[in-house]
Image 1 (cartoon, rainbow, N blue to C red):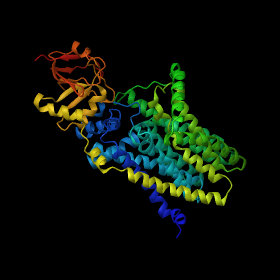
Image 2: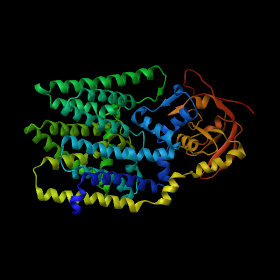
Image 3: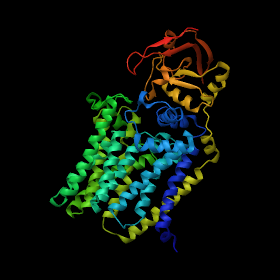
Image 4: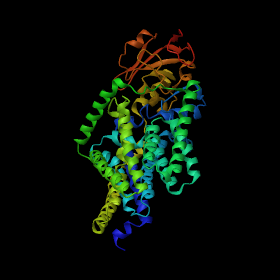
Length: 528
């Protein structure tokens, strides 16, 4: 059997596609160690939201009532899946790795599934192209810039990726309903949309808004019933999701960090930040720039599909391509219009349309008239590309680096643990970016809670009980902007270690006292 014919066989193609993503994730994680900058990005305090929540609620048996959760609490699917991984592995290092692998793979699989629904029975090579396209996210780190920031966006938990995965799944269900019109699909849609809105309000921009606008494009006399039912189900789920989110927030059963919307004063600044970032991205060379170029090129292609499919009355293709365009517009411009695009890290809000460029290009090629020689050559080329990706990922896997990742013990934490027994260190205060990092990695049970430079409580993604129920005896000054303010609040200051890597002082024991409700800023001191 000739190689090009073997490669397009479904039983060969699917495992190779999946294998390409699995090997890429393994390769990426094998190159995190021993670079502290890479590892601290993956285990920053923001990225440790779910591990710290699991440890506090499940391992330590604390109550969720006094927690200050993210503005997007990520209950579904992130928290459910991550907690399951924690229960199975009992290791947030392993859970983070498995979560990243499954999440990256889920994106590629769902996008390829969407293509199969739109173009049933078409060549499997289109789906392989989608996997090759998605592989460029990891290849950018491995072979081009070695900048983890872009690859990080598809691997990390609780950075709105769960909302994107849910949006892809809901879009696939919508396409299934439009073709089969089974009511059970509407039930699935309602449940997933409700949970997704309740978990992350960005989901409203990722699915319900583009969906409703796209459905209006295909509203005809013969489509009134299915379109009407879809809109009713999705809008109802959004309403109940937002209603119960606000109900729980207002009852202060769980405290969500406030999130400001429609900050008009910041719109111009957000636009300039976004445009500057796009300029830097497109002027660079590498897989990241190639993905963005292909995305922008795919937009006029998708407009062509919208126009031609409308003229040919190909409803499913017309609806799908229209959804992709509207989705791209909504997702890219919503954080700008909202005044939320304050720095380059905000790409995490707007990156998702780029990931759909592989789908857009596949749809365009599948939609255009057949050119048998060209398309056969394209099939061979794409299937050879995925083999090249597999080889490129395999040669980059560093077993020593992988072992270093799974046994990672940060130098900062090691130093604090070494001092723990000698200095009787158990509860301390520190900067937000140090607190969770030390607490989760400590092998001596050292706990550090996040505070401002003046030692007042920094309650972002934390539990009030951490502060009010404990006596603190030391402060880690790493990453403090002003190391004089704490001296105005604390007594009995004694320097234990003060060098470039660790700045730690013992102090007379202190605690925090409630003033009203769950908000307490004042601190009181207990004299030795």
